[in-house]
Length: 172
Image (tube, rainbow, N blue to C red; front, top):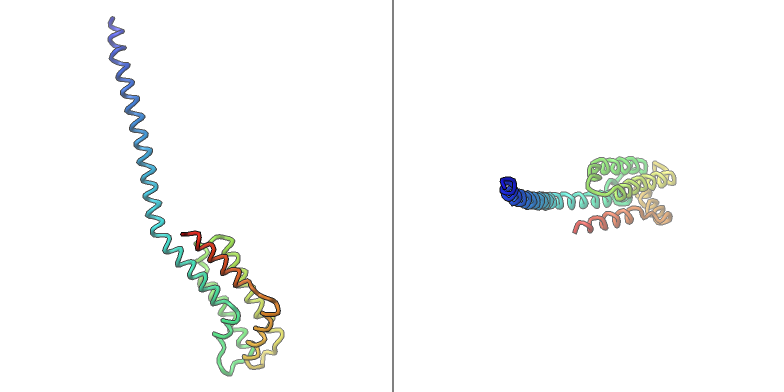
C-alpha cells in the first residue's frame, strides 16, 4: 500500500514538473526569438541610412570618374593635352581611392562593376592621349575624348550606375 501511495503522489508531481518544464522552455524559446527580432529591427533601423549613404557615394563616385566630366573639371585655360591627361588620371585614381571603403556596403558584383568603370575610364583617357600630341591645347584632348568615347561606345559607367541603383532598390 505504501508503494501505491508514493506512486500516487509522484506521478502527478512528475506530470506537473514535465508540463512546467515544457511551458517554460517554450516561453524561453519564444522570448529568445522575440529578442533576436528586436535586435535585428534595431540594427536595420541604424544600418539602412548608412547603406543608402554608401549607395549615394558610389553613384557620386561613378559620376565623378566619368572621363568627359573629369576632363571638363580639371581643364583650365592654357593647359596642354599632356597636362589634362595627367590631371584626369590622377583625379580618377584619387576619387576611387577616396571612396574605396564603400565596397563594404555594396555587393561584390556591384563593386566589380565600379572597378571596371574606373579601369575603363583610365583606358579611355590613355587611348585618347595616344591620338593627340601632348603639346596641343587641352580643348583638342576634350574633343578627341568625346569622339573616342562615341566610337568605342564606352558604356561601363551607365552599366555600373544601373547595377548600383538596382541593388539600392532592394533595400526597400
